[in-house]
Every structure is written in C-alpha cells, then in structure tokens.
Amino acid sequence: MFSLTVRDRMMVAHSLADPFFGAAQRLHGATYVVELTLWADRLDQHGVVADLGVVASGLRAVLAGLELRNLDDEPSLAGVLTTTEVLAREVADRCAARLAVGPHVTEVEAVLRESDVAWASYRRPAREA
Image (cartoon, rainbow, N blue to C red):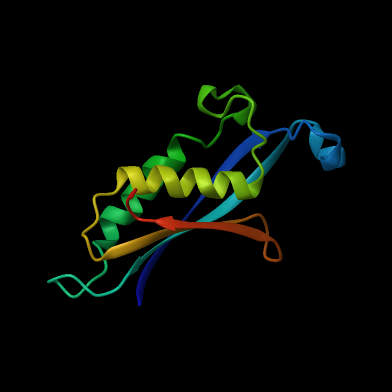
C-alpha cells in the first residue's frame, strides 16, 4: 500500500455545548495541524499516488472553507458538536468530494492535531460505494 500525505493548518472557534465537555462548552479557539493522506494500492502511470500540488491545493481550499470562522455559526455544521473527531470526518469527506483521484486511490484519511500530544483522525473510502 502506498500513501501520499500533505500538511496544512487551520484556526477555528467553536463551543461544545454538552456538559460532558466541561469548560469547552464555552466558545474557544483551536489551531489544528491537518494532515491529509491518500492511500493507493498501486502507483499511477507517472509513478505517484497523486499530484502533490493538486492534493495540497485541494486541502487548502477545503480548510479555507472552515478556518477563521466560528463553526457554531456555520450552516453546514448546524447542531453538530464539532469535536476533533467530527472535524476530521468533515475534512476527509470534503477532500474526497473535491479531489479527482485515480481509481488506484482507495482511501482518504484526515488527521487533525490539536497539539504534539493529542490528535484524532478519520479514514474513509476515496469514493462512495
């Protein structure tokens, strides 16, 4: 299995409106280092998983739609607890929908790192079945 990973970052504000989250129920900010990995069972005719620049640009475009926003006010996330895990799924889903990858790419994974000691990820098929 081959993989290609690109990294970027985003800053967001949000609250986690459930007593489970203690102080994080209040509005607070988060800066995530975001890694997007494409997994492939083989390389394409150019000997790559995908064009690195295209993948990096696609991730940047997806993150631009989320960053420097209060996620509590985003219509597409209305009523959603925007935990790191949920945001990892959101980034992976948006990247899978945006990136035109070859049939050899089997999975897309997004890792959101809150710090050097805590992160969450979500891995999904590259295409809907």
